[in-house]
Image (cartoon, rainbow, N blue to C red):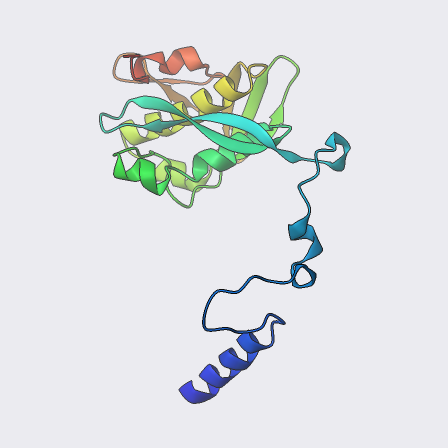
Length: 194
């Protein structure tokens, strides 16, 4: 069975159209796919493109929020910010003790943004598994990331099953509020500038 699998793998690899050689060889331009041989389009009418940046907030080793920049597509949407935030720290950041309070398989969803600059974010069940400071830090990461990347969004209302949810804010030991929260609610969690 293993021999048959290796045979199929070898045939599949050898039939890709690129000759096999023992040493590196320069490929003929007719073997390179056209899309790879042309520079990327700079035509703005061709749809979303790279070139925008999102500021997301991760955690340093003292559980203070620090801002890091990620490349995202244009135009940047609040969901783009959430998506890169959910990816967490890079390997390099992780080695420098940068982390996140957002569980790995979290699936937060931006439901809408209204004209007054309030974003509605649906929490998933993993949020309710968070305890203590982790729950507060997760909300802080979301609010700080969305409002710093998209200045027209000034507040975030969290929802659970379509109903406004209480959010913990960083006042004293944490306070539960049933209102949209802002970056100011989490300002005490930011790493002070050096």
